[in-house]
Image (cartoon, rainbow, N blue to C red):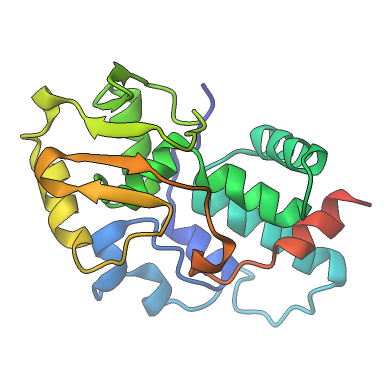
Length: 208
């Protein structure tokens, strides 16, 4: 399974926006974005005029990096969203939000989506009582998610849940912290995505 394993702090600098890809580090003085607020590379400090296509490309790259999805898989998500009824951009974001690794992150079992992906891949998460180790698995309304009983003593999971107490839970999920479990009560809501995403630019890019 293909995945990006290189440095991720450069992604925030490239997109000119904190994507919070490193959990605690993003809130400290070590954050690369705060120390160097310009794109990475030897030409990063040059002022570059961005074309319309460039804006569309940057938006697509930003969303890919937020959810940890590579190009081929992202294109499949877009094609699937285009076949569904309704707004294609909102359908795309709903599909990305409905990934199992993102749902685990939203519930607070992990500090970042990358960490949530690792939890899923290592078999620490159950869906409807069965182990699921596919990060791209699409959760459905009515699904019950839980950290496996043997994995509930993991300090990373405990710490993540404690940190998540100050973070509001999205309306389409419910959480039982005592049982390390949650459930899907609805579909992802576009208004609850806090990062500035212009999905219409992605639709324009792929519609050319």
